[in-house]
Length: 283
Length: 283
DNA sequence: GCAAATTCAGAAAATTCGTTCCATATTTAT
DNA sequence: ATAAATATGGAACGAATTTTCTGAATTTGC
Image (cartoon, rainbow over all chains, first blue to last red; front, side):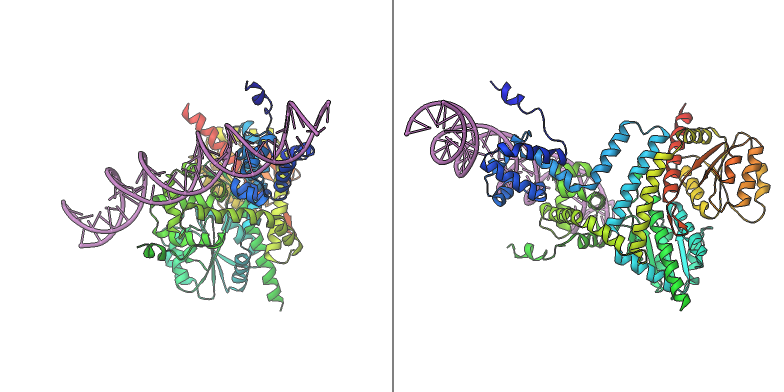
């Protein structure tokens, strides 16, 4: 006796777009209260995504059970299943990337092309996150600090070394001389004494954070030097000894992270500092 | 009897930014498991916003009760209260995202944010071009050449130096030893003699192409060494002295090019070579 | 205008969720 | 080394949430 009931819902929309289509298709034949749900859902997708049935029902002027029937009318088992679609839409942009990523992953990540495709997708997402999350004020303070400094010192080891090394090169090309602190043994800390109060220290460090780098920055910060740090989390120990912190969430593949987003930010900093210096030097 | 309990938490972060600040402030004094929560929360804010304690706890590798204690440590009554902050961030972010993008784009290329937005857009485009134009066969030959080489030598000057320096680091992390050729004066060419026939030379060079690098690669190529080159055009002089050429069109802003796309490709190569080497070393 | 079918509200049931509690393990201080 | 303090895992509890169910109300077809 239940075979009919089961048979009528083999199909549930799997993304927000088809859900919207389904609603508009069925809304003609919907009774009053379900129509009310439909209009509220389309007008307040965020509240559907985050609220409980009780809250939403009260806001939409219906009973909680009506919401469940609404979801079932659209082909879902219940309200919760429909809610997931709305949640996916809320996360939004990430969705197209994760969708493409799973597609790539299905085609295998063991071929060189697959690995590259994976990194490219993740890098693009990282770049979007960068624009979205970047602390514009911190970025401006960075430019200000670096362009007004008497001398710019650059420090970064391991994975961070290419970043500062690139900054060293690019800033140099723009006529901004910098002091790249290379690591040539345990004498790093001794060189703090050559950094003066009017100088700026740009330090990049990523998890796992090199203790020497943090120690160095700490000493410089203690001497009143402007410390700008580029790191991967506010939990980074470098954050506490910096006047300005720039955060970058870099794309990962297993344990290995690319540097593409970081390089994008670094280049922008270099160009902005170069511009700013040009203005002041022309005055 | 409850006045004390109520009194000790008059303070709960009311927005995502101050929540992040609070986490980073308290993270120093946090025990292991709470630290684990902190890191997971900052890395996966979306999942905190949408998931249930059971789901999140399992994904973060802790107990549900630990999540509650984590929220209470931050000043909230419980997990649910903290979750609302994450939800607010999720909703606000989506509404602001496109708005923010256009604002950045309109702010011109003279503000730091504008420059960054510009680079991000161009980098994303470059990444797209990379997947579309990449010579898969050349990429596979590259992996093959590097993973079967007795020794891998890396060469790149100026803007290309960060690339090879990063490869040196990443491959090293994966257990693949490489020889990074640093430029310490005019003696570069003399070192060709240390490169043997079974070795591979990975050389990166971009316009304007350093004559020393091309000359060096040419001599190595003449000795029968496998030369893989990473460059910005098939017209590059390095192409004629390479067994395999990888081409990357990097994002530009005026005269200055980012390295983000190049770094993405470099990372992929490193991971692929690391994988391949692992297979063969396990045999 | 009447009967059948459908829709609805509200209560009740079943499940899930967040939170608390406590015994055990671990760290810290002495 | 020992004791005190703190942190942790896991079970248990109470609250809240989703879903089902039922009788009443409304609509539909004739």
